[in-house]
Amino acid sequence: MRKEIQSDWAGKRVAVIGLGISNMALIRFLKEAGAQISGRDHKTHGELGERLTELESLGVDLLLGPQYLSGLMDFDVVVVSPGVPKDLPELQAVDALGRLESEIGLVFRYSRAPIYAVTGSSGKTTTTSLVGEMLKTSGIKVRVGGNIGNPLIGELEDIDSDVNIVLELSSFQLEGLKQSPRGALITNIAQNHLDVHHTMENYISAKENIYRYQQPDDFLVLNYDDPVTRAMAKKAPGRVFYFSLTTPVTPGAYVRGDDLVYSDETGEIIFGQCSELALPGRHNVANFLAATLLSHQAGASLEASRQVGETFAGVPHRLEFVGEVNGMRFYNDSIATTPDRTMAALESFKEPLILIAGGSDKQLSYAELGHAIQGRVKHLILLGTTAPKIRRAVEDAGGVLLDEVEDLGDAVALAYKIGAPGDVVLLSPASASFDQYPNFMARGKHFRDLVASLSKE
Image 1 (tube, rainbow, N blue to C red):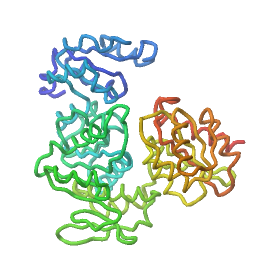
Image 2 (image 1 turned 60 degrees about the vertical axis):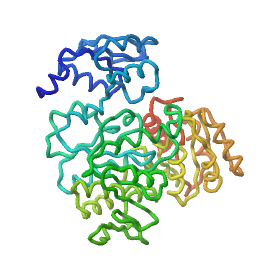
Image 3 (image 1 turned 90 degrees about the vertical axis):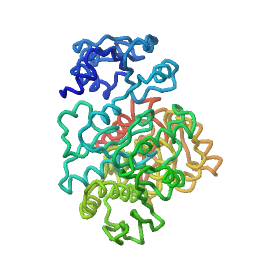
């Protein structure tokens, strides 16, 4: 490990709040640097499972359960997991002393490689993955991480300055961050995570950290079609590029008929066609334009973007085709934890739709989704905590055929029973998963397994 890192942490008393995957990698990093670690989590010893054994083998002192935030003022640094609310009084007191840190903050501090980052309310993972593929196709070394993949804190020593780091960053990871990447991208802004951020102003402010600390020679890619992101250009310290599905933009990328057009001060280049993109849905055209701009400014060729666009079929749980059973096609869009994501999914299909929606509540409005469902869905199947809210929104919009069920197994069984050849059965919950699953990936995997069981019957 580099001497500068060891000198920063040797002998330091560090409290690590939240013992999830990203902070486990962080704990290993800090232990190697010589820090004394106190691991904190509201979970009990039993709930930590196999993680407990590794923590004990690393010599980490543990404080678990309801008192996990006590005594934080005694530590030199407090590192917080992204999912822990930063407005807790104990954390605010530490932050006031300048002692609050995060795994992503340390990646920024110690990375020798240039960092490019993507955020937004939807499309982050797809866009980040596209950027990584476009750079690889151009022969550029790249590591993709952040909110997807393995935590990069454990890989920093192996990442040299000739590698480009591409990060997906959530609002939780951006909150409190005091550094910004060389190139930043915001896909869009819509209501999300208001159960944690409480207000849209707080949520937007967290997102803005992706460019707030940029330098004049850095750049920012913004969605011109989104008035919230378009207005951010006025605050951007560096150069701004736009992408648009409807409007010619310069410098930027946009759609003209079927053409995908890149435009800057030297002129226009047609670098692909919408009809040739492997990803379904108009929203994925926007994601592709955004990824092209970020990757091109990072050194990728437009030809590489075209090649990736024609072959990249998506990532798991994002309009993922699961299978066809008796002429019905099943799609897993478990990543859709907000109404906006589900509305985008509905626009991606022309076939009759049976929609499975509902889950845990993020305190979002479903009014607009109600109208989208009423105008597009053949039969709606609801489950979870948000089922009553979605039902009211749909009924207020005019109503559709609708059933409420207990769980996803019941939902898939009912969809199979009422469906007909040519129908699309779409899991796009418009809600988080935490009422019945640990995360959206587990929910999506269960959906896959249920569909696989149908095909065996």
